Length: 137
Image 1 (spheres, helix red, strand yellow):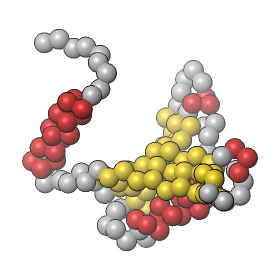
Image 2 (cartoon, one colour; image 1 turned 90 degrees about the vertical axis):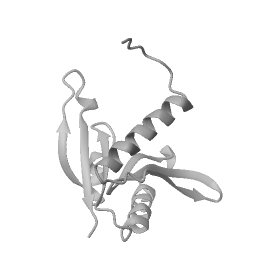
Image 3 (cartoon, one colour; image 1 turned 90 degrees about the horizontal axis):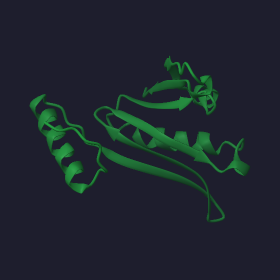
Image 4 (cartoon, one colour; image 1 turned 30 degrees about the horizontal axis):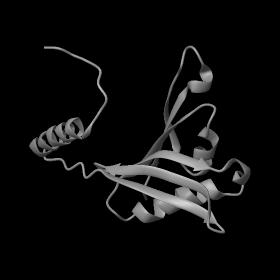
């Protein structure tokens, strides 16, 4: 057997997806991976965006960005609320996300997320990772 680093392509992605689906089916689980994106616009200008995906029983927020000169106006909170409102009665258990220390940990707490754990970076504390969860009521 030979192991090598390669650039991902459609063939590899298809192989991974098919094998994951087989394993999930074998275990009576449905992944149902579905990406999402919500945007905030002001006068047709993009001022914020949130991306992520739903899979298994969770809504995962991967990216949340607000334009630098628009921060502090509640745009990020409105984007979080839009995701929560959209998925709250869709059978998902929770929303979760991960952020670095230099980013938005306090923001997520203000939005009602609970800190599950912190993964420390021994070389650069700014890169400590904060893992958050918010259960749907």
